[in-house]
Amino acid sequence: MRCPGCDRALKGQKTTLEQPYQYVESGLDNVFLVGVTLYACQCGEELVEIPKAEQLDDVIAKVLIQKSAPLTGVEVRFLRKYAELSAKDFAKILGVSPEHLSRVENRKAQRTGAMYVLGAAADKLTRVIAHKASQDESIKEILLTLAKTSEKKASRKKARLLFEKRPRSSRWKSAA
Ligand SMILES: [Zn+2]
Image (tube, rainbow, N blue to C red; front, side, top):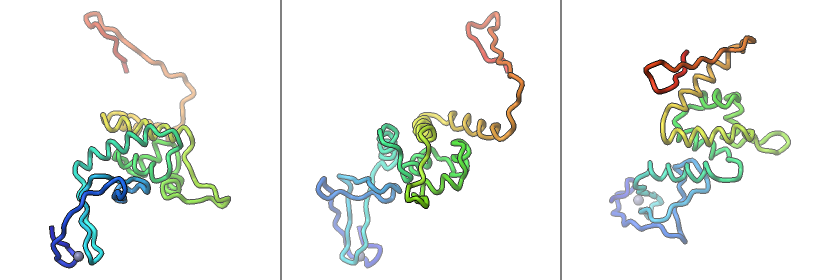
């Protein structure tokens, strides 16, 4: 490997527990990697090889989804991107304004000094969406459709839910 800055030949070194690589590319501020190859040049240029980055994202997402403390702003942003949702769609799903989501993700402080955060319900919903998105896409579609319909006024009539079991079928089906 040659340095893209000064064309010196570079020797790679695996990062260790003592000197891990800070994975800033993830957008997170506290993720460090052991066992990736780091190419550091005298000119200051630094290159890193991260194999299987997608699977790494899966593992990071899993840890964030299960952490007990509330999600930080950058963690919310990581999980939103992991679920491949735009900030606009994600805000709609959570039922918050895009401005509020932006303040949360960018860790803006309120005038009191307190950080903007998602509420407990939105925090949990973020985890569910990220978890489901890693398995299938349907939850995203459902939530996006919900976000669209909730913009309309709720009807005061009680909607009838209809389920049908056809004579020759062994299963119940929702009859729309
Ligand atoms: Zn260089």
